[in-house]
Image (cartoon, rainbow, N blue to C red; front, side, top):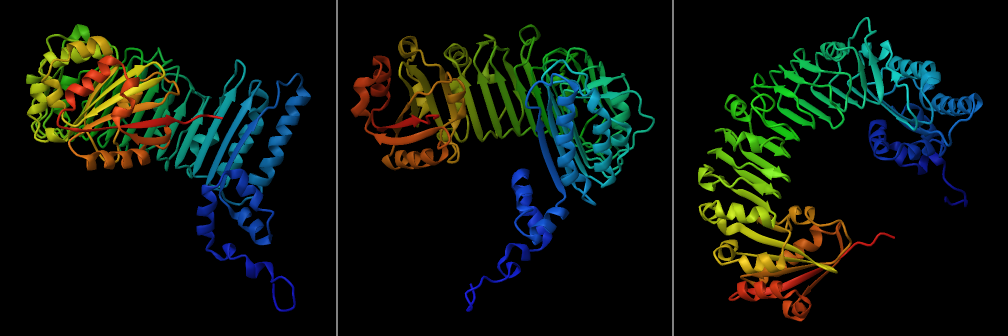
Length: 533
């Protein structure tokens, strides 16, 4: 308000609008799109900013199942009206994201959809995201020719659409990212044609595609990242990849599929989930020696391991190795002289012939080992204690034991796992029946390993974590870090004396704490779970 008692002009008070337009657009990109639209009515300046804002993200959902054509047309008119404001009045757009939920097929919408796609392409859209949800048995929307010759596109994401063998030309000359989810590929060569038309492609995600028996990638010299994922894909029999600069390959298919990536010598990161372990489908022992740049290997839930013997991992380059076996662990022979990080989780039966003595990992720094009671006994007999004692940083290891005790989850964290492992645990294991043993290199940013929670039933119970440490300062530091790190999982944190609550403990649990806390400081952190209103 000025000296005359009136408000200053809007332009003088609107400091936000004085920012460079590029900065304003960046700020708006963080907001939900609906809020960006609402800003357009605040002032003339805001309306001008809105007219030039290049990102569009719209989601429509049919309110009910249309019973006749009039309802369909009303829904269509609603979409058209909004697109008139958001799309057709703009001269140029950068991102166009459209998500529509239908109760009916898209056949009647196809001409309108084609026009919307054409309008976005005419405005030189660089990122196009199309997602459709069908609440009936659908006929999928068929991607039109204009989309696959859009030279302005750098990012294309498509979900629940159809790609047919009717394209006369495919030229996505500037496309760098392609993601296809739950799409139907009509024609064996259609995907290969699409990929051949993307010479600058760097990132490729294929999720639950159907209609393919072979995927062959050979025309993408810049491809760095390839992920294929599908739990409903049964037709795919073989994947061939010839990509000279491919760095990351992620594979997650439940059905057997042969994989040929041995020519991808620049690979740094390999991830296999639910792969069938065999010389034909997943020849790890044959593949790794050829990958001279490999840094990390992750193997989760492999099939057919038992019949193939122990997994052989041999590589002078490997730095990170992750194993996760919930069904059975065939054992492993590991020769990785430069390995720095090892994560092994075994919750099923173990190969009795497995021995830690076959492991060559002299430079190991980070260790995370998680076992069920069943698997713990096998790995213990396989020389677990001796393996841990040879680690140059074994002093940083911590032991975690987790158990359910009716109304509460009990955990123990011991600072010296080798002292515990050297004693007899038979009686404790038989009576307490803990669900998880974890031996891990503790980091301040992750004071409580997630493996303890992964094994828990999904119930909202409080957790009692008993600490057995050599100093009171270490207990207080962990309590401080834990209170910060676990705020999303727990609501309250309380540090109490273990003696105060020992009367509530199971006898086997109390006996273990008494036996292994001599000469140590003890305390218990009680963590209350978050309660959803």
